[in-house]
Length: 256
Length: 45
Length: 168
Image (cartoon, rainbow over all chains, first blue to last red; front, side, top):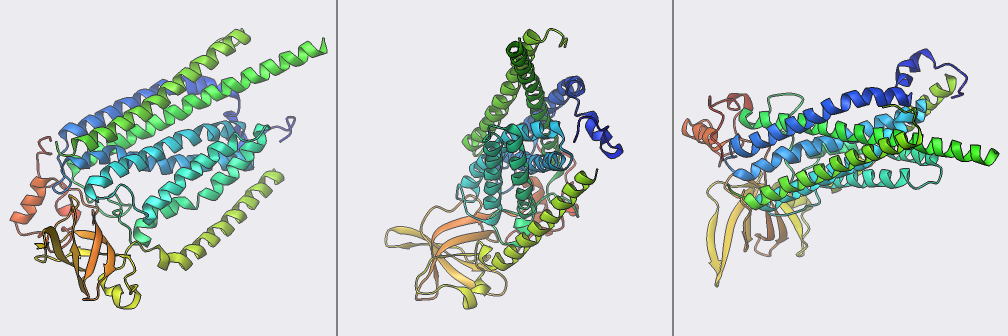
């Protein structure tokens, strides 16, 4: 978009946050609240899940791994969804903050996906009898992990950051196909992984004494994810401003 | 508790990953803020 | 504005194309995406001549027997999917979740005597998470026999006990 044209009516709300100064001010106020909520809810949920929630009649105490595995899995998918939304904002509306946010979501999403895979593996060994199987659910989540890694590498692979952002956004959007595959893999194909316990329709097939700590942990993980991404994006905005100032100063020095 | 080593491994890994990412983000933010303040005195935050 | 709209439409068209392609590919390959065969599939799909494949289903109630082959302890059980069943033999450590009525996935090959020799037995967990007290209460009241199949609808038990557990 040309710098001279005023922002169109539709894009005005979006571009309010394109102003880096305004983003830093608002995010600086929001970040402590989000971070504390994330820490508090996660701690409460984990302590509840570890020490107060009942053991499962078959799994015994190994069921407690669920309180970190399931939120990590949800955040792996939700994180990718947010990456895709940033990519649309970047490709269609050329939103400068969306580029920075996407580049910062990548590594965090990859970490949550890795955590999901690792904790699932740790649960799978004693319960299933195998660390890993190539069923549709596990394989599609592994693909998600590689999509994240690909995005992380692609965004940082170009000398011109704009080209990296463009390539990363396209990769991220292609990868969105994987999200419904992950969600419905356990329904479409027969897998070793169990189907969803908490469904869009019908009662959750989980005892409430286990459900509450799980939901607390999920909420806490969500706030934690947002807090880490927000903090990284704040840093990225400031780093970009530092680069801009240094470059302007160098040009000034050359001109003199 | 049954499966105690598995549970400890899962939670330990979670704390480790979350801790590393949180501390890194915090440190990076602090670094950027200090550098920006040193370069641009008008950035009064 | 028009450039933006053009980019948006381009993106939507690409997305539509990609989505269709993915759906077609998944439909085409859906037969190859099965992780295991059920006993009823064996007649039509099972690889013969000693090729390895995965066989899955429920461990039939009352079919598990621990025997010996020479000095080696061996477990024999039937895997059923309701329509057909197959006798499985396995020498090795069973996973914690293995029990009668549980879903299992085994890796192995058909033998000449019509039994399935497994080199690996994996237990499949279902989507229910239930404390021991609730499972016992359901069993005692006759609402559920874990050996016979899936538990009753979740809304009948997921808030069953007034006291939410007593720690681990």
